[in-house]
Length: 513
Ligand SMILES: *[C@@H]1O[C@H](CO)[C@@H](O)[C@H](O)[C@H]1NC(C)=O
Ligand SMILES: *[C@@H]1O[C@H](CO)[C@@H](O)[C@H](O)[C@H]1NC(C)=O
Ligand SMILES: CC(=O)N[C@H]1CO[C@H](CO)[C@@H](O)[C@@H]1O
Image (tube, rainbow, N blue to C red; front, top):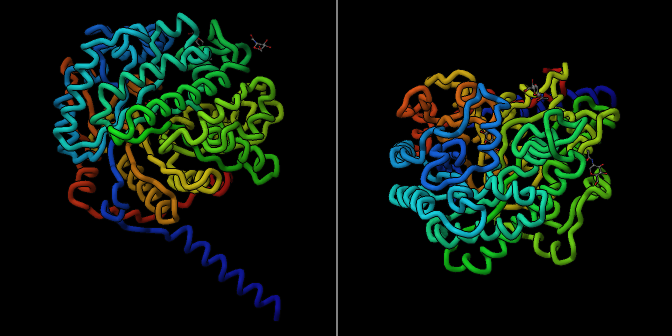
């Protein structure tokens, strides 16, 4: 009797689980999002502007990288979308699509060519022109100050972000931006994705300034993979916090904007259900989220990070700890995909591999350990991972105001009929709404990218993320809205209903891959 009851209960329970997971079809409209929520799209200076040597702009470390011949097939951002000359046309397109917000980045070396000191009037003119055009179009202006494009002069002078000198220079640059543009900018983001740039720029060294050391990366001439990623993050946090303090003390009351930092967000599932892999997954989360959030919320690095890095981890003085604690009005997330984590005791020790190899797992995520292509943003579609990430942050760091600042799907072909992108975006917007309904404090969603850009991995022809296609083969860089642009427009302007039919059940384990 008892056994039968148990059996019945089990059957009932599994049916319920299935119902919860499998049949999660939902429908919603733009109006289902809370008041004040803003939908937008993003670009970034080096990937969009072009005019790299025009009107006084000086090279950044990203220019150095693209001209180094490491990936000649990718080309350079010298012309990119030629946004420097075509921004008016682009704002018109944004307006036609119905973007509520546009997030772009400022090129530090266009504004202050020597990195510090004299401000370039042509740089001011360009950003003022763009900002005014957006104001006229009634589009909210979200500006990010830094995306991997440190002025080359500062890199050469003192090694850039691995020196504490960057804190004052960044603060001075931010000051110029707040002073010149802050009357119209509603959202400031200081630095994009430092938690993953630490790996790409200073551990494996595949991204500018291409610093790494044997045996962790192989093609670097300078660097130290075991210490520099920690220095980079430490100085990024201090520079960020210093800019926030300046904004709060000098500008916020009058300008009424808000300011935050961005992080790369990636969801982790254990590769197997072994205790080791589950532990590795936890450590990976504490690194990817906690490396940035723990200091900003609690004033210090998490124990996991301290334990992994030991004496290589810089420490916050009492004064610095005070400076970083609560130094944000919001957190921006760039979220694309999910990966599997496994414990790997044999993994070489580098900062991100300190996480235990956990993050060797970043690049070793599939059942056959295929390297990076699987990791490229947008490849694995797992909207549930976004919802999990939002809920993880809420549970561990409090109900912080969150903006999803980048999310999107890249396609190797540049088809105008991008139904797969639409499906990806629909599912991720649905996941965002679900997280909000579960109590997450999400305030905005901005997709990557407004138009095809010079892509970080693959240049112009391998990955297209845009709502708007760009013909990079034509001198005029002809723009053409994709089907996804019409879909977004319908959602934003006509309150069109989105139906996510099949729900999204995340793979519970690699066995299902
Ligand atoms: C190092 O550079 C060489 C020559 O450019 C290239 O063939 C090789 O793939 C690079 N190795 C890595 C790990 O990037
Ligand atoms: C990296 O720095 C650490 C600490 O200063 C030092 O012990 C180590 O030898 C350095 N490694 C390289 C490759 O320079
Ligand atoms: C901030 C950042 O790193 N953004 C990148 C996110 O991913 C896309 C696609 O790879 C890049 O082009 C962005 O630069």
